[in-house]
Every structure is written in structure tokens, then in C-alpha cells.
Length: 261
Image 1 (cartoon, rainbow, N blue to C red):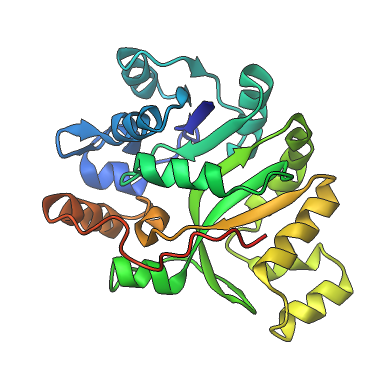
Image 2: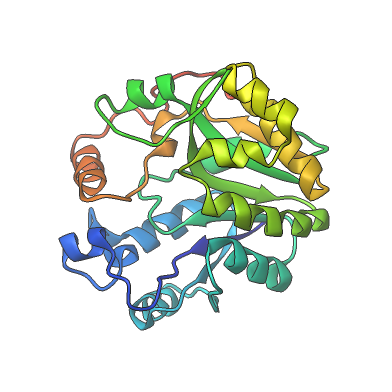
């Protein structure tokens, strides 16, 4: 399976995590002797994936080339970069990010196996209970639905060519990812009321997003709480540094792994 690692940067923007770590890009932060980019690529290769990197910073491009990776040009935002990767690499295509510092091959394999056979697009998420059991005290952004509070795991599967139709909608969702009520508003009044009344499940929301995009979309629940831990803030970096010094069982958390849609 092909995989693309998103490692782009906005021109002129200073990433606070990179600045905190004293490197040009957070993909180049070293953790236990390897850059975050190298760790993610190693996990993907361990899961049997053939990886490529979407990057524009010269330092990251150079690192990718040292790792023997094809480099794809970035576009205006992650969703557009994924669209470019989809054109160049085809489907099925696994998508992840360079700051997925703790990524493990088992998480990738489990996700791919658990994706429903009829899905064009799938996204991996973890429940708040799983995340907090795996990393007590962590602060994440949660999507609140009738069936629980969820956080993304930075793993997506574009399983069929029809997945290309989801890119435009993804771009809209991407812009509102910190404001879930605005995402839900696109569903229509009935779905919005269900959300406001606390009756809308995550599976129903994702299925509706799929309908709007013209694809069959599914959410898969990860049993691995640490799969939702990426490096967005300096405190995230310190948390993953501590975990690499004193590793916990990576399966710690709910062991359901059932597809939620």
C-alpha cells in the first residue's frame, strides 16, 4: 500500500514546536536518536507501506531524500496536498503526518484491517477514555457526539478512486476542524438539531459527510489511546519525550477496535 506523510509548512510561518526545539521544522525534531519524520516512515514501512513525503521546506526535503523517499510538492493546505498525492500515487492511499511521533506499525495494520469493505474513505479516531487512560493529563481537542468524545489519530485511508470526491469537502472541514458545530451546520437543519440536542453520533455525522461528498465514508475506532497523540504544542513534545524514556504498553486503553461506521 502507498502512504503519504504530510510535512508541509506555510511560507513565513514559525511553528512554535520547531522554535521550542530549535530546529527549522518540527519534522526534524529528534526523538530517541531519530527525527520525527524518520520515526513515522519507519512505522509505515514496518506496516508494509511504501511511503512518500509531501514537503516544501528545503531541510525536510533533504531529510526525506536521505531516507530514500519520493518527495511530492505541497499545495495550499493539507487537503490540497493530499489531493495532489492521490493523483500521483493512486489508491489505496494511507495518509498521516510527520508529527505522529509515536506511530506504531500495529496501529496502521489494525486500522487498515478494520476499515469496512465498502468504504471509499475512512478516518481513525480514539475515544477520550482511551486517550486519557493511555496518557493521563493530556489535553486534546475533542469532537463531542452522542456516542462519546473523540479525537483524531492523524490516519486516513483513501481506499478507492471515488475518494477523490472527498477532497473538496475535506478542505471545508479542515477550515472548521476546531469548530465542530460549523461542520455539522453543513449537514442541514435536521442534523444540526440532532447535534445540538446531543443525539447525533459520530458514525452518523461521518456517514452524512460522505453523502455530501458522494462517497461512502466510515470512522474506525482505535483501541490505542496513544494513536491520538501528535506533536502540536511544546507540551506534546515533552510528553512524547517522556513516553520514549519510560514507555507504556502501546495498547493501553480500550481494546475494542470496532469500526464505528
